[in-house]
Image 1 (cartoon, rainbow, N blue to C red):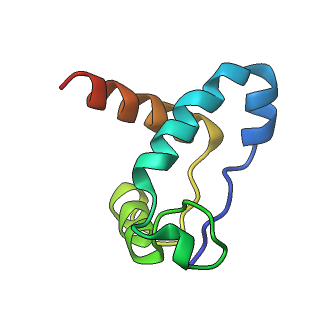
Image 2: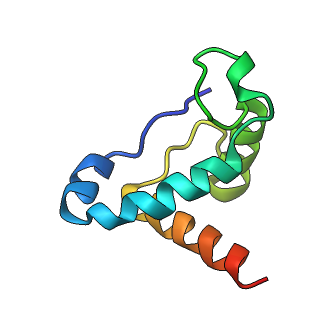
Image 3: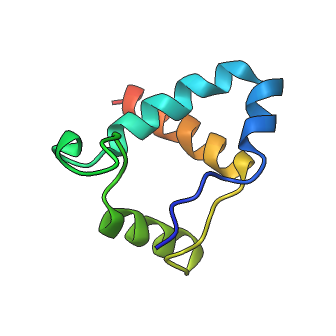
Length: 84
């Protein structure tokens, strides 16, 4: 399984620092249940769920989204949750 940071994300955030807000908010919604009980003790999605999401989005379970795709997906997550 590959759970790498999208290439160019750091550069994107240097140019657009406010994009960190939707990224963190969407990451928090995807966190694994009882994330504090599993190494690396970070609020990350579970490996099975992450593989499922990458497989449904890209057709490969080890795909890594681009920085633009990650930010746009995070913005979409925030918009879809606040529209309810």
